[in-house]
Image (cartoon, rainbow, N blue to C red; front, side):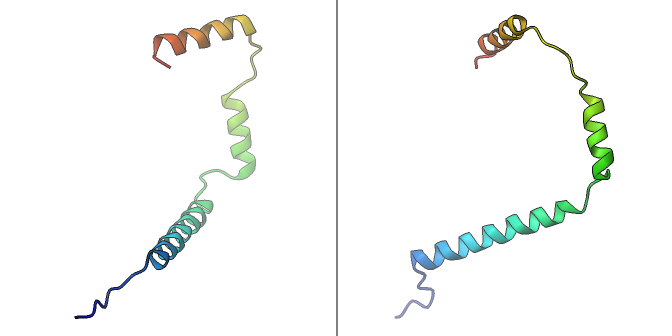
Amino acid sequence: MENKNNLSRRHFLRGVSTTLAGVAVAGTVGFAGHSLLSPARAGAAISADFPYKKLNPDVAAEMAYRAYHDHGG
């Protein structure tokens, strides 16, 4: 009895890689046209949400160390 579903490893990997590449391209193209804001308004929204604030390096280092230490890394 001959197996009609004889699939080599090479054919399987080629099919999987082609499928993954297609899904990646389709996902990128699908999300590209669905922006809620125009590029100019999106840049303005990002800069307005996070205004620049000068940090004290010693205080920032202490906060980072405490966060890492207290929350287990």
